[in-house]
Amino acid sequence: MTEDQQELLEEARDSLSAARLLLTGGYPGYAASRAYYAMFYIAEAFLEGEGMSFSRHSAVIAAFGHHFVHTGKVPVEFHRFLLEAQELRHSGDYGERHAVTAVQAQQQIARADQFLELAQRLLSPPSSSETGT
Image (cartoon, rainbow, N blue to C red; front, top):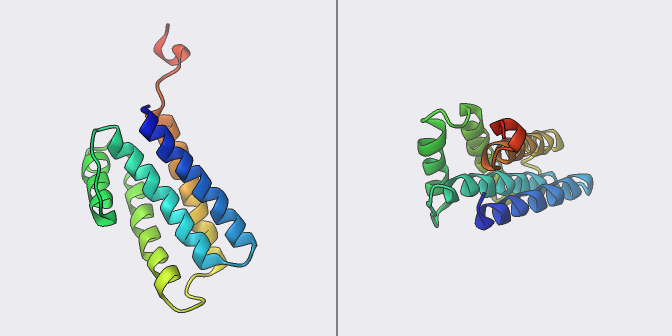
């Protein structure tokens, strides 16, 4: 894992921590937004490992789907999680005041946790016990 990938995963962890605090504080829309950003940073970390970087969110999401999901490197549900989180983030950030429920925000946080676990497993170098050395 590169230093840039590690930094992006740290950003994802921080965003998840913030999402939990925001949800506990009664701000589900903002919590869902931070959960989306956690997933977005994770997608960027995957792309960084392939030497790819994009300035637009839509480009990151499309490239993640193309290079990791369509190739079978990452299960398809993680692309769906990212797409749905982006939609909910838009609702939370730009929609009506209570457009996102606490249940929806909690679901996004749980999905971001799963995404982070996947990234840590796939982006980390194999341990010596896994390689047989």
